[in-house]
Amino acid sequence: MAKRKKIIVIGSGFGGLSAAIRLAAAGHKVTIFEKRDHWGGRAYQYNINGFKFDGGPTVITAPHLFDELYKQAGKRREDYFQLVPLDPFYRIFNGNGEAFNYWRDIDQSVAEVERFSPQDVEGYKQFVHGTMDVFRQFYPYTEQTFPNLASFAKILPYVFRTGTWRSMYGYASQFVKDDFMRKVCSFHPLLVGGNPFDTPTIYGLIIQFEREWGIHYAKGGTGAVVNGLGQLFLDCGGQIYFNTPVEEIVIRNKRAVGVRLPDGTVEEADEIVCNSDVPFTYKHMIARSNRPAWVDVWIDNMKFSNSLVVTYFGTDKRYTDAALSHHNLLLGSGNYRKHMQEIFKGKKLPKDLSLYLHMPTRTDDSIAPPGCESFYVLSLVPHLDAGINWNEAGPAYTDHVLSHLQQEYLPDLKNHIIAQHSINPMHFRHTLNSYKGAAFSVQPNMMQSGYFRPSNKSKVFDNLYFVGAGTHPGAGVPAVIASGKIAAEMIDPAPVRQQVYQPMQFALNA
Image 1 (cartoon, rainbow, N blue to C red):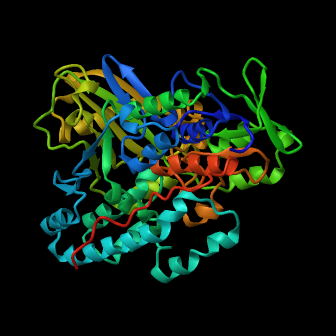
Image 2 (cartoon, one colour):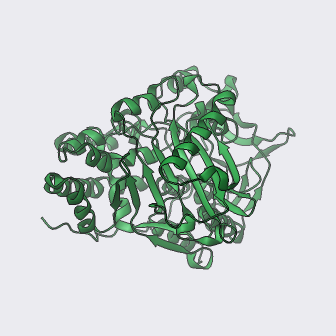
């Protein structure tokens, strides 16, 4: 082992926990400072009137990334939390009440395409073949950094040759012609804060991430995963302070040497891993006198993801007859391109609704009181640059979303809600320290990916590392876990790098 270091981790989201566990398991003295009263960051779990509501991530894929963390610590993931595979992955509604079941098995998904748009069956198969190739090409880069421009340039010939520089929607449109099928093939960027009309097809590897390893649900919700990782960190000898925000990262001679806490105390460290949003960190956690002027210019020219309005609600009845699954995408029936422009570039709330409805009691009734149902509904909205007054608009918008659910999917819903909580872009800004209230931080476009994305090791200050959605490889649980792995291995290189990739399990009949 390298020299035992004193390491501070700012924040206990998935990225912070991933790095902290690896470094603590390697024998370093690791301390986490967490702003909130519990683990999780965006994955914080709310407990309201007997309901458990997962605050953010609900789609768990690539379980091996968790297993790898426990293996490094000499533990078994199954002893900390249990995962249950889900199938179909998603139920996607087209705005007319018709639902497409998005199965793990490709032949089953092909049958769904045939049911909706028989003329697109062959094109859909070609699309799936294309995303398989994208996965094979780009998966290795999700667990390693790009140290220089030359390393990133190696992937460009493939990108230009295959057209994967095109947007996900544009790429899908080459193969399928039905508008709804194009949405089904291109919605995945929305899961990581990207516009399907702007996000390059290299992010299509998410599609095969899911098919390769499945989509899972943790018994007890994503909060059970967070608790399991937190306990593993403690079992590795780590220490955490809750309700302890970091006011400032202390810089001396262009090196990060410690953190200043609210009471003025300075805790020194050999290395600092920051799970706070990268742009927010540079702008608000490092003194202006310590950061070069170009840093502000760089951040001011970044493009940021959309934000979200999320409403968590529990009902005093079960909706067992509803045509809903565990994960539901409720797509609007209006102009899709215009709707995305309103979300990512607009200055007011979109008229149309594109919703994700999470219904975990379909799988796990332990997270709600007996006879009750648990939900969370997520709506895509612009970030804070839109200038929307959320104190005024928030309650009315939430009521609009619940009214839509009541009319289309959950009869008499409002009369049965017995627990409710909502968050909006102001929560992402003030509670989660997300710059501009962008729910997924830096937008995933071609010029903000790979080498051009904020790096895992600061290019401004020595001894400062970044993990989380706003750094490489990007947003989404697997990518964020991988960012922690990358940062930890930069601090203490692993003697033997474990190869977790296995050949594709799925083959598509031509």
